[in-house]
Image (cartoon, rainbow, N blue to C red; front, top):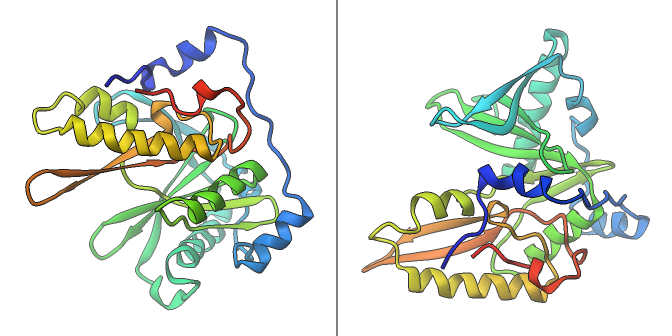
Length: 258
């Protein structure tokens, strides 16, 4: 097995050919009615456009000191109190079905912004003030093709996905796991890795992507979950990028990261 791309190759590989980024598709009335009837369309206290009014940003580095595609953004103090309260409430909508009685110990530790790709998401870090544990979720532009991808993942795959929309805003839960490119560079050749089990899981993941016409499954667009078992490890590969649901027509682009 072999990965063909990693984080450091993104800009280089994309610069080798003209950019053909997928356009953003607006949510149609039919899709909006579906989202409302299935509880996906809810009123959110903060919109994507609200988060765009930041005052300055600082590039973020990973734990090894390397620059990432994310920037930490800051807001005017007059706006931050309103945003902080709304972002905590959105987290409660994702995790507790809107029960705000559990949020008094929560706070917003950081808001990050990503300029890579076409979705330009915000990543919200929520921290527990009692024990400093944290969790993340994402706020993005409501792109219809991504919404279709999220809903089909929820319906057709073994995985459950929590997301909500409000007009042009899309809120998604964080999908935890090790990004495929990082796993390839750091863990794929480790002695404890069961490459046969991993390969079998990748075949199943690849078939699910192909049947659903879910394209653009490069190594940084899916994650790997590892669960210690009785005698070995269990692997689960999950997609985290749904923008090209039923968009990319070439067979080889469905999943070509190994």
